[in-house]
Length: 264
Image 1 (cartoon, helix red, strand yellow):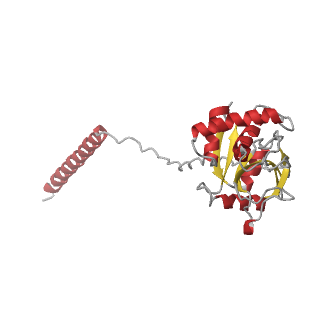
Image 2 (cartoon, one colour; image 1 turned 180 degrees about the vertical axis):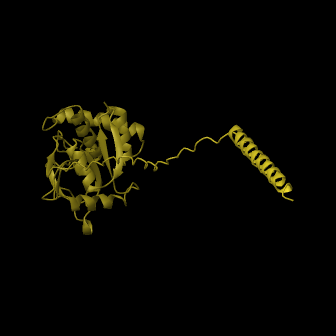
Image 3 (cartoon, rainbow, N blue to C red; image 1 turned 30 degrees about the horizontal axis):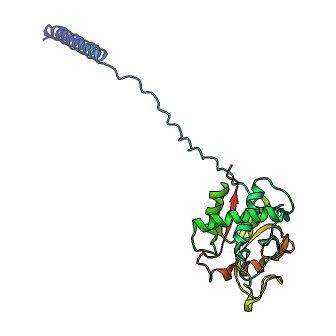
């Protein structure tokens, strides 16, 4: 028995060495295979930037309207619609108010800065305008301002605008050098009272050229061709507003006014 024990121990040692060797070979083989496997690329950190706020468009400032001067006077040459003071019932000058207004305004836009238009010149000028009115609007004696606008554009190349009656619009146009034509009834106040003491008994359709204003006194200055004293005649705004409202019952044109500008 003693002889067999060393032999068994030697065999056990040989088996152990073989097992350990095999294990070592297996590990080296596994490690070799691991080294041959493709390795994933290193992960790169991704930084997400905060969103850039959308640019806010710059707001366009709205300019404030230019303050109006406290008073304005536009020098429009004056003529009465009857330069020789002829006011008979059958005198044709009774129907010349539209022509007188158009003559004054057209002369102004031509650069005429005289105080008055001489009677003979005024008479001839108005007669030419009336002739054009009768040809353009046969049988019509009281012209709505839209028709006066057409005559002014046709004869003088002026650019017309018929707009609602408004005091601020009147003042702004006067401040910019544009006189304003307002249609009225001559007895357009309460109870049929005349708007000026120079008018006779008849209540008739009429047009007036507004040439200036005084805001503090609430007055509008006019070239009123309906009487000889009509140059720079001052009317309270309330009077012209009432007279303009009264004419809406005579002509179906509403509360309007006519503004010309130069055609050049």
